[in-house]
Image (cartoon, rainbow, N blue to C red):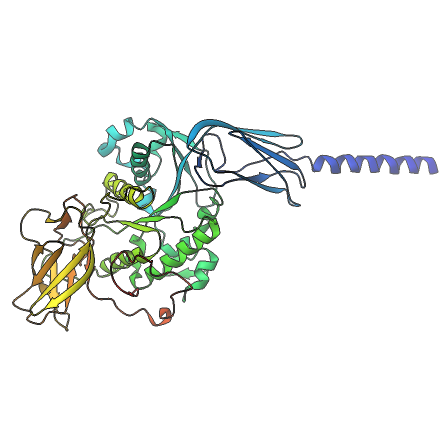
Amino acid sequence: MKMVSVSAIVCFAVFCLAVSGQADVRAVKLVSPLTDNMVLQREMDVPIWGTAAPKERITVSFNEQRKQTTADEAGKWNVVLSPMKAGGPHKMIIEGKASKVTLDNVLIGEVWICTGQSNMDFPLGAFRAKYDAQVEAADMTGVRLVNFDTRGSGTDWQECTPTTASTFSATGFFFGRQLYRKLGVPIGLIEGALGGTQLETWMSPAAAEECPGLKWGQLYKWKVVGENYPQIKAMMPYAIRGAIWYQGEMNGTAGTGHTYAYHFAAMIKHWRKDWGLGDFPVLYVQLPNYLKPQTDDPKDDSQRAWPALREAQRMCLNLKNTGMAVTIDIGMADNIHPTNKLDVGRRLALNARALVYGEKELVYSGPLYQDMEIKEDRIRLNFTHVGAGLVSATGEKLKGFGIAGDDRQFVWADAVIDGDSVIVSSPEIPDPKHVVYAWAINPIISLYNKEGLPASPFRTWTDPPPKEYKDFAKPKTELESETNPTGREKETFG
């Protein structure tokens, strides 16, 4: 009886050891965006990560590099490939003790994320009637596309073809195509966008904590703060060059222009911090024209939330490594989703080429208001980004400028181009103090540079920040860059 008991115990112990040993034999696993066909960021450290058995030795071999690491107690592991030049295709092999993963057709080039709300999310195929020829010509094996959903789950990378491009962001596609043509290196585009989202839904917990009146996971206006952040978090720590951002319609409708710049500053500050890539560039789209065209009132406040939000977006140029695509001339009165995504992508790409890729002489922006000089009964408005010169869109008299005295009761102004400036006046305003331009939800516009890029709407004064944001400044969040692109001195957001 005793011998049987001992035998049973020994057998049971052996069985338990076998089961225990089998439980620790886990296959090496990766998650999106680490898949076949991916593009890795050139000239930058490249993290590769995944899971395996606890304490398992992992080897990653790629492009003549061999990196090793050991999984932690939870089975998580991470290696970092050294910076590489553009090229490919290459094969990546990830090996553990009992399993191996092979990723094929991997390129090295430039990687950008494409995020925001519906105007970023709108797929190229939705505009098939307008862009049929563009879709049919979308066979570009050097451009790769991947999508992340609201849960932070990513699809596999795919080569750009008419089929795959049709389901990808139209704005992202045209942006990436421009870069591919100009840079001549592989381009990887990662989309994580969702319609109807406020800026605040894309914030990390730390970003929300920095902003008075916001609490992560709770309702702000119509949406939950941070509910879309998992889409961004899931992309980390994938090495990227930068981000393009097309959002603002929801915040404009919610009337949050007075806080938008502060929230945007906090959002991208913590994206950058969480990614660990330094102050990577964030290029964004200013709200386009929309709804009823402006007629009688030079400062049309009937839909004042959108002009205020455009102004907040213009002020965000004071943030380090940002660029803005002005789209005030390519919106649609009857459609909040304008069909001209080609020029949106092209203007974003102009920003990237000049600000990121070193084309220093490239004119990448339309005129931006810099400052003003009051002399007797007229005001001289000075601009940056005039390119080869300021022009009227039609070649006729400039329109869209309003002028006022201290009371800010605006009348239409006579406006004349004088070099890099515009001089405005009105016989009705003998002592002018303030100017607005294109200040309506669907404004009258006329001012461009000769390169065909429109001037941003603007006003010549700033409101004080909301009381709760009066101390929301350095060092918490950089509200001004060293170069101060708008040209204003010590300007506050409001």
